[in-house]
Length: 221
Length: 225
Image (cartoon, rainbow over all chains, first blue to last red; front, side, top):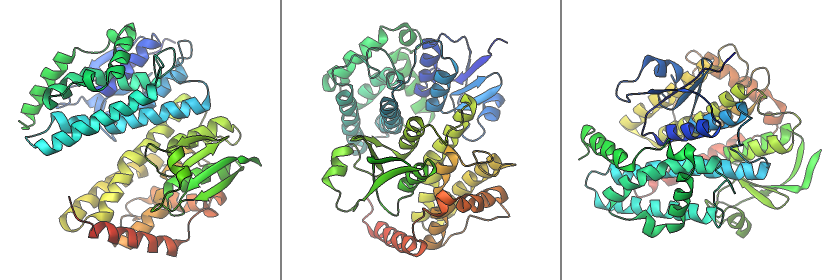
């Protein structure tokens, strides 16, 4: 029986983009369904009744929610492609820790920068915090080409979609991530060399336009 | 018994995150050395092994640190394969991880909100917490444990609700664990607390209530930024 894989997501969702990269790495065929986050489909609401959020992977009718859960599921089901998580338990623990760290820190911090409604102090603090987080990740990367070692892995997949949001953070926050974290930006360029990343990730200027529109719609200008 | 001197756990007696790691170690029969940390005066070892957030629990295995309780439990399950904590089937594993994430992302923050809120904010926070209990109650329908017939990963991660939520209710004077509203969840609490590895590894209730009273008082007295 052929696998039927559907991904409910939104083109700019960092969490959804992670899943798309994972599916591309494993060369899994899937149907992408764009969700309007202001008018969620009944399929999304039924598949993720607890959070009502994207991304949701529906594999042969069964939904899996939460990007980190989905990526581990993909890694465990499609075993023919490259392993996304390392084989060694200590390295796996490390990968899980950093992926969790990325998920908990960058998004809320970045939001405080671009969703900011004129509070310069909050924005300045968030900027400092974001730079701190990115420098910490630079430290963790060290001299390796990828967090996964010689190839793209779980942590790389978790982090790289945020790189398309850097332009948004930089423009609203008036700073340069290249200037603050050049090693991390070099890593971003290496990731972009991979088809699974370059074909999936959106144009940062498009992301910025989308966020400008969203900010207006949410009355945050 | 496996483990012994090669396994060390840095913990704090009242912490639910630490206990869940101990439950995992006990379920696997892993021997370990426990090191109690004074949170107000952290040891140089703790800071050395967890420089990122300097928090407990930290598991040390052959001198290598593993941090974050959910990450630690998965590590334990992968190194010591007997008495598995996570199921074999990838979909079942995804469900177990989903509910574990739900515990940490939604339930803990909802409970924390109620614990520290007052007045109107408290009423709103209780509604949010009850929503999480409703979701958990629904998930448990027809099951003894989240893991099915036996406790598993989600049970260990959600386990704080079986003991520490009751403590919070007493300390902050609120009530959410209503068997009429959440029959499956309250029944799960009873079953969970009867499991020997859990029952024999809980902090003393009176001491925990006292600790959380002080913790709450301190937090409410602190200047609001």
